[in-house]
Length: 544
Image (cartoon, rainbow, N blue to C red; front, side):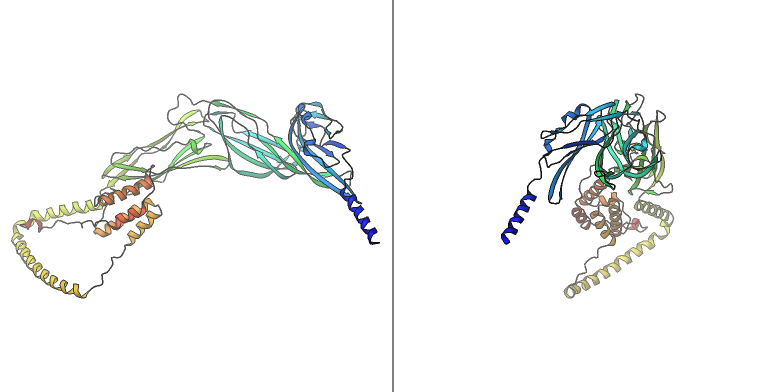
């Protein structure tokens, strides 16, 4: 009994593992007939066995069709211990001509399919609402200048559910092409049918004059379409590959006009902006920061010229590296350049900062125009230390002119008394200091000022402007009088080099990395500036 059961199980296993039958039939079908010239349809090829992918030869299709992507799938079904296998190909075909086109018989391992007569209509003859997927493109202008930004927009219309896919940029030679922003997902109703619309925008800038040819953007992916299986009454969603291609475009590119002068910039609108305070106060040695923005509509940031500034000889200019960006606002492409520069006045007086002019070509009016910032009239006051020194000299001279004859003798007596009192105080101080040296050992460590801490922090964080302001405040506190950067640099060679290094780091275009520790060490070890000496009426009376 046991042996009989074992033999039955062995026979059943062999019957399941052995192939039911070899390849006997190859069937072909298309997803629609008639088709549209230049638009893809799906050719399905089914073989009733598991065969190799390379067994199918599709070279015969190239005569009348553009052959697109091919996908292969396999399946196995077991019913009542009867196993059947199937291999399916799906090929995207786009007819090259109108009329009746024959899809030839395809052969796999000696088994051939039946040919299919396909009716092909002219492009555009199919009602729009009958299309499940199509793609459109448009350019902002058909005539442009060299360097002008052209927007190329692509819209993918989906009447079915998208499973996966990719939009490919158009092929173009002699121009710079890049995507602007992210894709925009929306909906549109065309001839009463609602479509999902995926919109993508590219920027296009021609490098040379002539005719610019674009092949057209394309889509390739898989969508879910409603289908039935073997005449059943129930429908289901089937994944189907699809491709679409936009119509080609041509753009005429014009050369730079010979009448144009200056750095070439073509746009719809160009403006210069600056935040300037008319009531601002300026002083020798104190940096003046100017933030200037150059904004252009329908232009790329790489085409914006650098802002050049001419100044009187009494000013030093330290420009930072310009910041550039391109963005989309209200469906307009906007390019922006931000230029920050520090201007340090070295002499007091009345000055005029010249007007700033940026030439550009208006693509709408076909004329050269200028974006301008007006000239600025400023008054530079002397450094604070110079003002106090001049005031003191004037005061002393006024006192000397009227009191010399009457009080010169009194001042002489006061001077002698002062010398005597100073001598006695000095003798007492020497005696007390000698005793304190033997009894007092603790030494108070000088406290680090807040300004010095701010200077160290600003240097380590790369904040050039804050570092220079904190340095001025620290050195002014140490000396007891207001010091400019010029005054501080004159104290020592190390301080001069430290200030130059900070300025190069923040304002010079060729600035290199700052040796922060070396700069901080130079400031900590700097000699103190002598306090401001105010001339006294007693000075001329000193016979020494």
